[in-house]
Each structure stands twice: as C-alpha cells, then as structure tokens.
Length: 281
Ligand code: PAF
Image 1 (cartoon, rainbow, N blue to C red):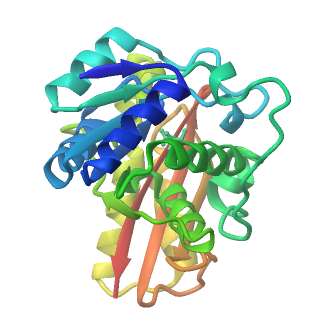
Image 2 (spheres, rainbow, N blue to C red; image 1 turned 180 degrees about the vertical axis):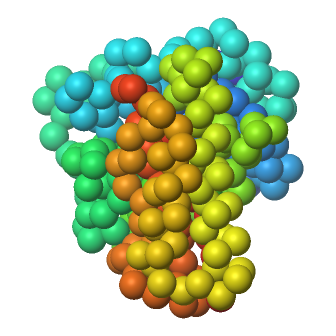
C-alpha cells in the first residue's frame, strides 16, 4: 500500500492505472477510521481493481466554533487499518496542498443543502461538495462509497455528480452500529462515559418512529413528538432537529407516505451526533 501526500504523485499513479484499464474504487474519509469506514473500504476492495482512500480533515466543511482543531487524527493507526482491508493507496494531503494560497473555486448544490444539517451548519455542504469534487477529479474513481449515516451528504453528492455530469457511480452502504445501536462515528470519541450511555437515545427514537409507523401511525407531528419524548429521557441530550422528509427533495412531510427519511441530530455538550432511518409505507 502506498501513502501519497502530494497531488502530482497521485495524478501520476492514477494515470498509470487508467492506462492499464483498471477500475478505481474510492472511499473519501476524514480519518480516525472505524468499522463504518472499513465496511465501505471492504466493498470498494471487492468491486474494483485499484482501491484508494483519502484521509483529509477538510477545514472548509467546519463552521466557526466547530471541532476542526479537535477532530481526532491518527494517520499511523489509519494507514494500518486501511492496509488491513486491502487498500492500495492512501491519499493524505496537507491543507495547503488542497487549498493553496489564492484558492477561489467552490462547488455548491442548492436546495437539498438548505434543511436538516444544512440549516444547523451553514456552509458545511459547500465545504463537502468542494472537497469531494476536487478529490473525484484527482482520483478519477469509477465508484465512490459513502455511508447512509450521512444520508443528506450522500444525496447532495449524488446530485452533484448528476448535475456536473461526473463519470462515476456513488454507492451508499448501510450505517454500521455499535452493539447498543449507536451509529459509528469518529465523533463518538468525544462523549463522556455518561453521554455515551445516553447517546443510544438517537437510535431508540428512530426505533420508536418505525414501530409507530408499523402500527399505522402516519402523522409526522405525532411521530416526532414521541421521538422527542424518547430523546428527552437522556438528561444531557439537546435536540438539534427531528425531521421526517421525502427522499427526493428532503422537504418535511406532514404525513408519512411512500419513501421517507427520518433523521435526528442531537447534541451532547459540544458533540453533535446524527442518525437516520429510511421507511417505506
Ligand atoms: O463524510 C466525511 O467524512 C466527509 O464529509 C467527506 C465526505 C470525507 C468529505 O470531507
């Protein structure tokens, strides 16, 4: 496995693989890899000739007062984990390699980025689409893999690929969970042991929603009220949003019908966690 930190070397290696007609699978990450990332990497390994991951904590997608500085970083641990999945190349550039002085180009997907995490984290998705567009241009993947936990991110990136006629397929894989149901996330590391125990309420609230829908409840307000009650069982939980949206525009629905995304964002102290489920009635 190669570790590459500069753009010219990456471009050279990718060009050589393309010349040979090899398919490229790509998993963009911000590092501090967990089982969620590893599941994407194993799939990318299985489905492609050459497998690349990126490890880059992208300053552009963090707002003021967010956790850019504190975001966990451990390149040695990450490269060992990447190697264990059969990864061929880790691209881990510096901030100045990605955004040299004078950098001035940004990619923005409108509408889909307005609600949910876009409303609580202004500018976040502009940072995500800009860095992912750059990474797609560099890695030139045939397939790129993302987790369902970041459902809005996946939909925004699918839209970017479609609108900008990018020549790749985006593959979204299921959320990987801890044994108690908490969705895996690099940010779980920030939780105190008390908060970690309480954090299971995100998953519990989604299960409450699913159970109500199974019993025939369709009123979004009633479902959301019950989810709120479940999350409120956790003393330290502060709800950022509880939303039921359609899966095309991510617009809030008043009644559950067809395919819907039920999404929550909850803060425990400074740590903001998200989770979601897809339902179909
Ligand atoms: O999901 C993430 O880890 C990041 O948003 C991504 C896609 C790697 C872009 O920085």
